[in-house]
Every structure is written in structure tokens, then in C-alpha cells.
Length: 327
Image (tube, rainbow, N blue to C red; front, side):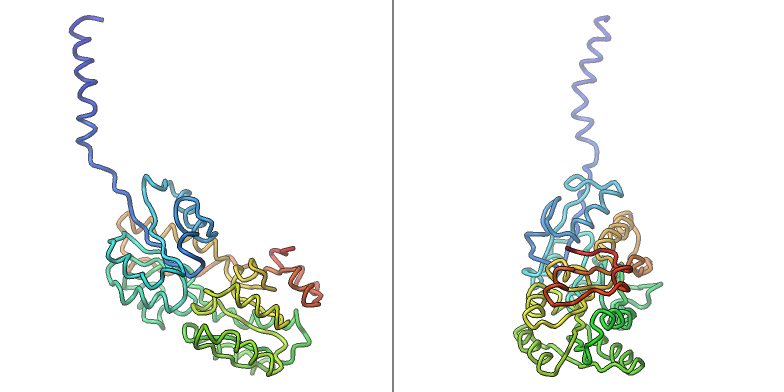
């Protein structure tokens, strides 16, 4: 190599760090996570124990995002819901949120500018005033809506198949899912089923609620994934087992902690789909113009051990339609 070429090569190499330093620094997006599906510690980091948050991170990875390089998360679980306003102060780029009307209402009050991606909003977001319409949200909310009331009749039908001897079905509901009882009542009147309205106004009254249902002769329970109830899933499943009353739940996580049966949207798929909304927002899309989607994957999950402990024989009509039988 000629002396002049060698000097040029050394000079160029010395300039590389300077040139690299002049490059704009890659922005690491900050994504808030708000969920009543567990404690904050179980939602933290790139490999969290929480299955739904992990599904969201998997969705981000499928879209080419690398945790730590392209984005990080700021989670707030059931133990940190009261601190939701902190996320607004942190100036996160978007917030992925679930937990029913109560959590979404908190976010609505906290910010009108940070994009909110709903995962499994159990109520009608239009009726809640979160969006103007599903096709044209018009505000800072977008994402997925369960439209769970539409499945109320199907859940009651499956429950009656599983527990044909149940003359009275108690329907649990709270103020965050106030539309459930009217929907269930309408189905009961049409089918001639006797349903019992059981409103829960306070977490401290959950034990008393089961006693109320039992004293009223309830032979089965319909339990939603509302904000108040879903955050106490393990306690509710335990009380249902102690009361020896078969229960149909809205979402699979109840069955994962020992519940009898659930029928509803695949919640992990919804969280994974939330990543597509975040991707569009990070690329400049306006949440007001991103149509709200409804789930396309539904699952019937049965816990055989819970059925055995209750002395139930799962009928073939349920077995053949079950997407998964948990042993």
C-alpha cells in the first residue's frame, strides 16, 4: 500500500466515530401499559410473567421492534392503577390499556392527547363517551372492543347445557359493566329462564354476594370480566368452588386460575393485535382515524378438574366444541 493511501485510510478510520456521533440518535419509544390482570412486577421488562403483556410484546417483535432498542414499557398493574396519571407525566408515546370502564374512564380524565390503545374494552366505547363511533373514533382512543354484551346469550346457553338442572342462574355485575344485567334479562325472558340479578358495589362485599346467590337457590353463575370482578379473579374462583356453584366466566384467565368454564374472545390474541395499533401510531397515524376493531377469535375453555370436583359430567355437546380442555 502506498504511503499516501495508508494516511488516507487512517484518517478516514479516525473520522468514523465523529461521523457516527453526528448521526441523529434513535428515539426509544415509551409505551405505557395499564392492566388489572396482575401486579406491576409481573408486567415489567422484555420477558414478563404476565401472559397478555407478553402477547403484546410478541406482537411488537413480529412487527420488527426490539425491546430496549426501539421501545420500552412503563407498566401499571392492579397495584398501581391509582398512579395512572403518572404515565401522562412521563410523556409516553402511547398507552395500551385494559380493565373495563373504570380504568378507561381514568385515562379519559387524565389525557386527551396521548393515544390510548384499548385491549378488550368490555363495554361499548361509544356509550362510554370514549369515541364518537367505532369506524371513526374521533378522539385519542382506538384499539379493540370486546362488545361482550353480544355474547351474553351464548354464554347463558352454554351454561344451561353444562348445568341443565340449574333452575336459577345468578348474574353477577357491577357499575363498570352495567349493561350486562339488561342484556342477560332480555335473553332470560325470551328463553323462559329464571335469572337473578346480583349487583356487586364493593370488593369487600364479594363474599356476601356468593352467600346471596346461594341463599336464593342459584344453581349456576354468570360472571363477567368487569373492572371490579376481573381484578379479583382468583378470589372469585375460590368462592365459587367453596359455594359449589358452577360458574361461566367471560374470559379464559378465570379458568387458568381454577374456574370451571369460559367463553369469550381470545384475550392474548387481542393483546397481540394491539401491537399493530401501536405500530401505526409510532409511525404517525392519528388514533382518531384508526377504526376500532372487534375480535375475530373466540374460545371455549373447560377445566375438567373443576368439573370433576363439582360432580359435573361435561356433555358431548360441550366437549366437541371446546377449544381447550384443561386437565
